[in-house]
Image (cartoon, rainbow, N blue to C red; front, side, top):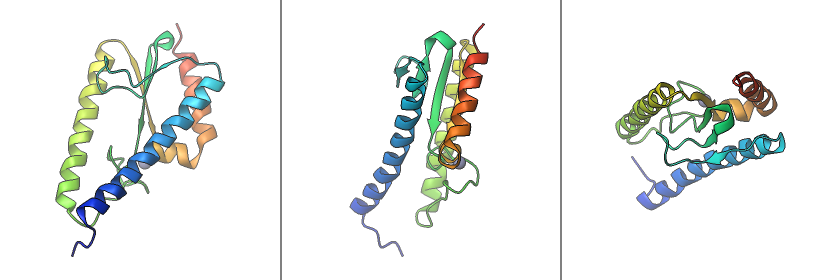
Length: 139
Ligand SMILES: [Zn+2]
């Protein structure tokens, strides 16, 4: 039985979205503090990447594990109610991500995907690795 009202459920889901936003903010602040300059949520590019670093020819997606279907990691549990609905929604997201990343790669962008669980488990290592990757992407 599904006891959560529709209203409450959308509230729960917006809380999940809110968490995603905060890992984006943390990542942007970190990059900014290391001297990187970037655009946010560039609508002109496929998938509206969270961070665009034109100088490095790199776009970064910060993916919430639930919404983007990160395998079986601890942050991507499918709800026990309306399971089919969530599975098909998340599969659509996975397919859309794939198409967007393909488009970006074929127009010459480096694409980096950061996952919520990596950032939450080990922010410092993840960010240091990211910064290394960015430096290596310079010609
Ligand atoms: Zn994950």
